[in-house]
Image 1 (spheres, one colour):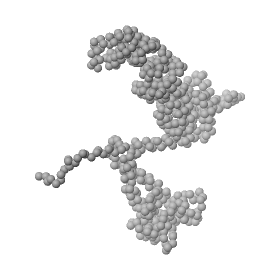
Image 2 (cartoon, helix red, strand yellow):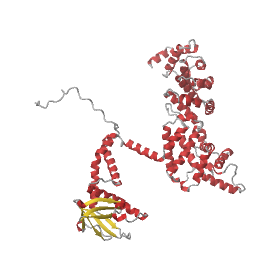
Image 3 (cartoon, helix red, strand yellow):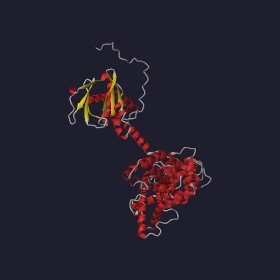
Image 4 (cartoon, one colour):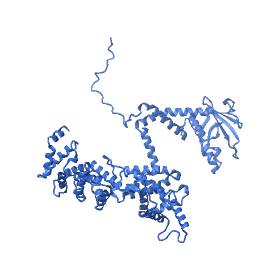
Length: 607
């Protein structure tokens, strides 16, 4: 800055400007002069608006020359870009003096630096233009196949795409999508004949076969009633569909999307509408309502109507690989929405939940920057509702740090202690005892019996109990079964008291709640049979009996309890490490010192 101020105070800029305007040397001297001039101006000491019109015209002539040194033109383009962005008046001069065809020539030269600076000036001119001028300029560029050239020769060129070019492609994409903003901000006009005809065309494409007309010979009232019913089937919330499209955004852009889908994918459109209009009312996916909300969603994801960021580079390659990219993206997305709706078995009440999942599917797939619409279609259809749930769970665990290797190692160390805690709880539950019902051959559940484990865990004590009586004290129970005599624990269909009951539907509940213990009685095998009062009691008793027999506790309840205890214990252990990142790998242990002379000699007594 100090050097720049000193040079400028000594008329350095004027001298450099004279060299540029004279243009006596079109080679290295001019290139160095332009570079020096640019670097001095970028300090911001002098405004770009102070440049003279003859000076700017001279720089424009360097851009428009055919035979020009390769090092000069990128610098001239860069200077004109800065002028265009900083001074509206001089920007208009540049716009009138530099034809778009000339910039296209520079873009098609296989010189990455020249391409980048030409794209920079092009986006600067587009940003400085009025909306109408910008639309005309972009129409000219697309007619001259700029999109195809960018897709084939810049995005997919052998050389890697630079950060600056990525930013300019992002700006070009944003400006092009910005052309949709007027339609997005414009509500439907109920008095517009054209818009009413478009709505009728949408209805006819779905419900009237080609060549047939609605309600031939019907009265006007009957015809209107039939139209209103078909618009309802089409998914509009009101019998007058214009009321749905009065909301902005998306305004008329939603109608444009629906019409594009019905005309360019007629079979998919008819299938969507007819399939959902024939479903049960609560499970039908409303096409029009979905299209309106989906258009809003796409506008948010693609930032339609938002000002361009000065640093962003997140353009989508498939935008340049497809004409009418926004409408084509809608066609893929509306079919995805219908697919997700069916996967979620959604009803009308779930509409917002479905839209949240579709937003996540689209956002995740767009973030992958697929190079073509077909690749986008493949990837987004592979991201099913089940896959979205799995990704959410994984991300939540990563966010909590649960999947970090040190945390997993800590959880493994905690497991034995916590399994011991669960084992202790199960045995205490057996000591408390439970009331069980006896199942007679006629399936009458009118008798109760009580069973519990003795406090020293050596005997199962049990006996009959009267209906309505409170559980008896263990010492009053007449029957006893030493734990040492138990051979095995049986569950479900392996139990003798349900094995011969058949496989009817009425026995299914018994299978899920039945368990037995086999034991030795006078050198014969006998059984003590149980029907648990609930699934939870079944898990607690089978776990407790397994623990008594030294077998693993493998119930679903144990898995849930262990996971809950592990999560709580892990969080307690890591409280002091909150907001401290935990590394994936432990830090390396430094090598041992070359000698150990620093060790303290314990034999020397201190005074």
